[in-house]
Image 1 (cartoon, rainbow, N blue to C red):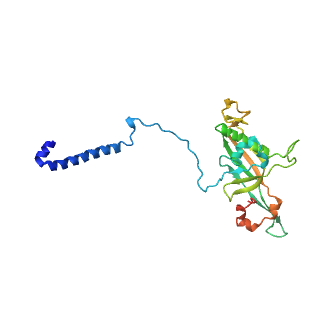
Image 2 (cartoon, rainbow, N blue to C red):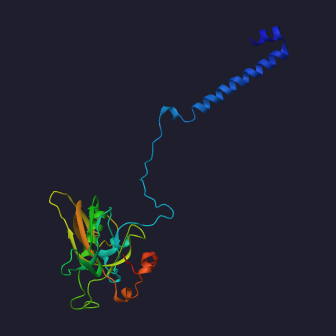
Length: 268
C-alpha cells in the first residue's frame, strides 16, 4: 500500500499521509488508555475499605444538649467518670421538658360589684420536669446508664454519716443547661425527684465497673458488673434554686433586656 502511494502521488505526499496516519493511530491508542483508566485491572474490582461515620461539630456551633452539671464533691468518684466525660448528666436523646411559670394573685370581692379586682402577690418558676429516653446497645452505653443513675441517687442525698465530709450539708445545687443561651443557661436547680422505668419486656446489657484497664469482660479487668436495660425512661424533676444574694441584686430591666443570659445568675 505504501509503495502504491509513492508511485502514484510521489514520495513527499506519501510521507505526509504516513505521518497523518501515525497520528491517527497514536490518538486511537491514547483514547483507549483514557477510556480504560477507571476500569478494574483484569476485570477484577479492588476491595473497598469501609470507614465508620463520625459526627462533627460545625465551626461556631455550641453544645445545646440538655445536661445537669457535676458538683465538685462528685469528681473523685470512679462511678462518675462516664458522666464527667460528657461534662455532666447528659440526656443522650432529645428529652421532653415541661416548664411553667406562675404569677400568683389574690382576688378582692367588694360588696355590690359585678367584677373582682386582683392584687398581685408573687411570681414563681414551678418545677421543671424532664423526661428522657435512654437506649443502651453496648457495654459502653450501659456503663453510662449506670453512672447516670448513680449521679441521680447521689444528687438527692444530703451529706450524712460518720466520716462524711461537710456533714449536714443538703443535697447539692447543680446547673441546668440546654438549647442555647436563651432557654436554659446555667440555671441553678435542685433535683427533687427522679423516676426510672425498668421494663420487663426489654433486654439487659452487661457492663463492667471499676475497670483497672480497658479490655473485654473475659480479661478479668473488672471488679463489679451491672446490667442496664436496652430501653428505659428516666424522669427528673428539678426546681430552680436562687440564692438570697442573687435575688436581692435582681434587676428587672436587665432581665427584660436579656443581660442575665450572658452573665451569671441563670434567671428564667
